[in-house]
Length: 104
Length: 306
Image 1 (cartoon, one colour):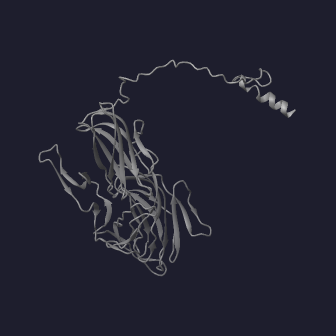
Image 2 (tube, helix red, strand yellow):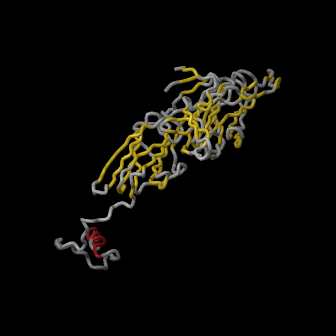
Image 3 (spheres, each protein chain N blue to C red):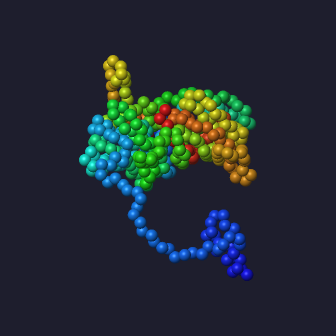
């Protein structure tokens, strides 16, 4: 069980659940510019939420297939002209983002 | 008197199912007398028909499809085949499984004969609870017959004949407890259903510690399909600055606020979530130094290869 910090959103997580199964981190999709308030609670500036760039999503791609023990993606089809082209992949996750850092 | 009553109620039970205590004659047991006789039924021991209806040739093979995302596991497949010469042939193969969230496929070539039996065992002793699904098909240029399909746990077997034919979404699923990600300060919680899995979210619990900044926060929960929100669950609780509150969302409860404890019990809808769906907090007036803990949640999980 290892603990990581996501370089994209700074969240911290373990790559394993308490029962030992794998855990897959996914960044929150928004960056928040928080609203500000005065000492009496009156709002000074509104909150603003914008989409996050460089999202890290460790879940497996949905288009992964297996061919002869290797995992990758397929373009085309055996039924069509040009046939099927299988490309093995080193990384099967949806997006690397800015990577992650081992914490402990 | 008690003995007589006991005798009346019990000793004539042997007279039959409809015997009436105190009325029917008593059952008097006799000594067993063996009466040997020649059996009336005889059996064919030569030129018998094969005991299996599944004839396979060398052009047939078994296709084993497996979904299992835990590392370090393997599958054992054992076969018994009745050869044309009358001998019974046994074979077993072991297939190491990759830890990926997609179907893996293996093939076992067959020799000519009658398939007598098939057994699939999952080598995952001590493994964490996790979802898997296994299907064994007979293959000749394409799948022609499903022999057995279902879920396995370490120590349990799937077999043919007589085994189940379960689809991935059948059955009770697997119960998993998951610790999510601790978001950065000022950020929302975001958890995603893994690829090729289906969840029934049973409970979702986290704490929010608000910073000194003056603002009235409200921590709510949303669920979406990756883009479109279809559940918004409001806590209806205002959390002021410099407080720590625990939000415990659960199915089949009513909203309750702790009288002394800073805990809120909140109802969770019974909604099935597919791979890629998200469970997120949506906090009104969240401040930059507010801090959520990692959520701890309980799910009922199935493999769901849509």
